[in-house]
Image 1 (cartoon, rainbow, N blue to C red):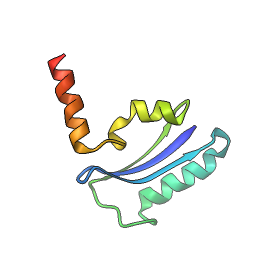
Image 2: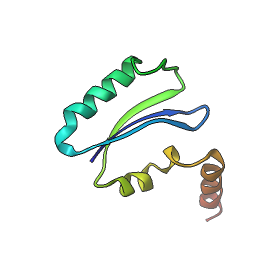
Image 3: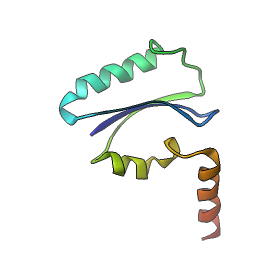
Image 4: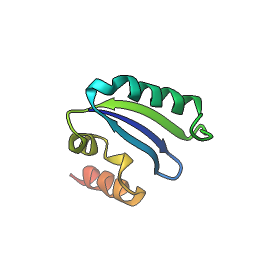
Length: 84
């Protein structure tokens, strides 16, 4: 699966999350390019746009949890890792 993500690092807000089947890579790339160009919304420097591949949405959520967690959850995860 392919995922296109736009994420505001300042607010920890997931602005765009779209998934695509592998065979629709061209559509995913098109969305990625349009987001980079800022055609869907006015992108600011704090907004990151990425395209990822993962075996499943579940795996993507696990490996890229920061896109789906609140700031508090992320800080809690960091604290737990530092204590361990």
